Length: 452
Image (tube, rainbow, N blue to C red; front, side):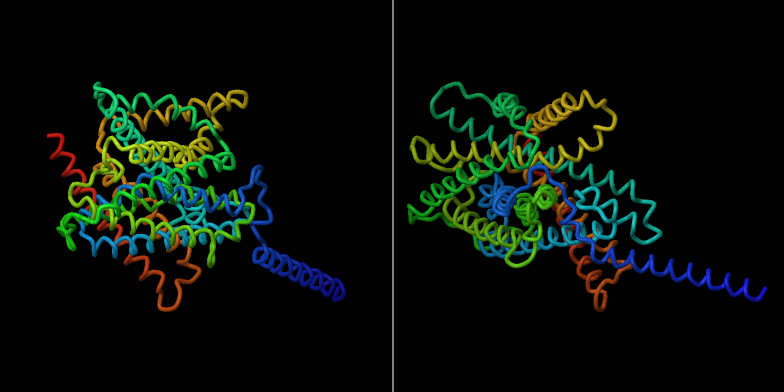
């Protein structure tokens, strides 16, 4: 009997050691699991292509709206504010991508999009917050949809305003901006049917080239005449929220970040120094500061929602810039709509039969374009739309959500020495609330004032 008990104890000990070994092996596998090695991307994007995409996502109509942003603050606060917003925007993108990679490693998943990252963090976060996983998923999707509708509506207004400015120079039939928005419906629907990010690279390259030439021509007109208008060094403090809203709208390309990073052939090149992210954002901040500073210095308080609309009429070079910027923003529209369409399709395709998936994609993308055009017709003012969309949607998607997600993810895993992550994110969340409330109030106040 003693021998039997001894054998049973040895078996239990062996089983316990086996369980411990398996658990330790699981932890070791978790530490060594590399999501990059398990990604199976049908059409991976090169590092240069990813750089072009990320640069293009931040260089759109917002770049040419920077002079009117400087009008709200003056020259000195405008320069400091541009650097500050660029730093905060870059930091929030960095912590979002880092958190996504960490949670991907823990969940042993090759890649996670924006919404899945938020949901997984809450699912594996503090016990008291796990029940909010579904709410967080819906909130992130709605925020993405808001950025999609609002941001691309600004692009439609921008293109329509530029087309109106061009056509009015040659014809006497001055159609309203709403009419040009309707004309754009069919071309935008055709563009949005491109479903793979890799196939958008040529469009991004073309858009970047057009935008570079436009900026060069704009700088030529800005510096050609040495008689600069009287730009204010300091503007009205009450108008500063409109500057911050415009700058956030201009620089935030966070809705494109996760698709770009997930489809890279070498995702390890995205973060780090220099890295795709840091390199692109440094160029963005420098270019935004130059265009905003000298554009406002040139045209003063008479600068319009896009500096290209302030260029002289009847000159071939100025006309060329206006045409090129239309092409640039038109192709940027397709890139900005890529991430929201991907997220919406993932949620919808399970309810559609497999044989109707292609038709379902076409209907979904067509309906999304129609919504942006309808919103454009409702508020056909470029400057006011940029301020409203930037303060509400882009700040929520680009500031609020990444900060909350990182805080929740690090809560049980360590917030750093003296909980510096908690203090840092708390200050940035306070900045977000100031942007949201003040920017939204200022934009709505101006909209009501104009249309009443």
